[in-house]
Image 1: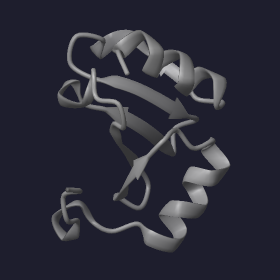
Image 2: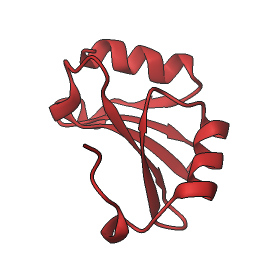
Image 3: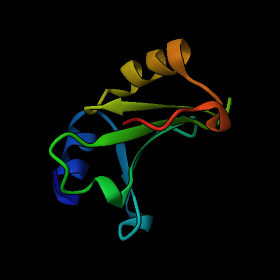
Image 4: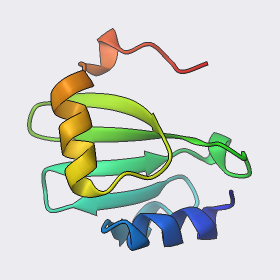
Length: 90
């Protein structure tokens, strides 16, 4: 999946796109509370890993596929961890 396709999928799932870091990250955001990130290392992967980040609680969770903001909030509630506690996906 290439950067442009990732941006389209983020937008289709209900995320707003922050184009300010387009060379470095694809960032989808939902209000001020939550972001969905795609690192350039995953661009071009068939099954990329994305990072959901809750800005207020400073917790994160890795996901495959593009969740809607409400799905992402539920995933963070159920599985979110502080970044230093998180295991990298394999």
